[in-house]
Image: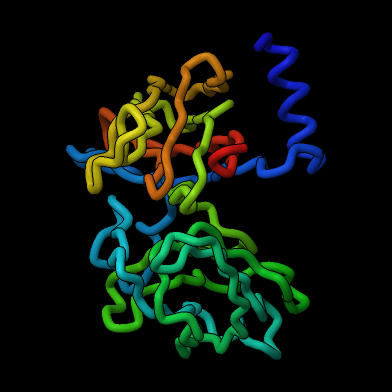
Length: 263
């Protein structure tokens, strides 16, 4: 397919004109990065207080599913507060099927999700806010039985997750079409998009590189349609960075087509 043909197809998918296909992706950002040998996931987990069990590599929930809770670090992210009042959670259940649940915030008191079989959190965002318009504190979703395991978050001053980690739903594949990354502090950083698969085969726990960009106070935006990256059902996608020196500041994003198998 030509570049113009690919763009036209993406437009038709965006307009909802292609059954079984949708535009899908993620965005993320991270400041004050370190030089962790395993790389650092591009999210703001290093700003959370108290510090989570891991802020460099986002933990992966049990494949059997877990019960999770939502909490803010500020009392005004509550149902009658000026901050975020309600959030919507997009998650995969134990079977890997996409689900949503809306949660009424209660400030610094954790609110349990009704669902007790959350396998992966793909997104979270505000659906009702007070006069502030954005979160008064970091809002996080964690494992109910272990508050150190933070899986996703909405940062202070925001109203949507900036966490690019995603799991492809059961019965679907994801075709990467574009991705971008930036480094803003002049700290040379290798930014890599990766996923837990190779050659259409899942490799649980092993995040294999799909593409990379070296950045130093620079921006990269890449048409990835020629890379042939097709990520299978239940694979986890994320973007991580490897700075040469502490203090790098990165943002990233990726997009593509999520399609139901057989479509």
